[in-house]
Length: 85
Image (cartoon, rainbow, N blue to C red):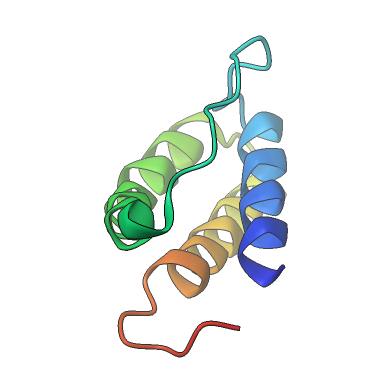
């Protein structure tokens, strides 16, 4: 639940920064065996998503939103070895 909420929040924040194509189709759910790979790939996306958001941030508030989105992304997807909730 927490991961899906985090992913939705990140998508919403990136949409506000112009980083999400709202017309894109959703991908089918991953099988359990690929969950670790998907999490690792999502974690590696956090830095470039932050850079992309900051490049479009024109106000201090938008920059703060980018920083919050980066922290949330890392908290959600970069918790290696953490117990699943």
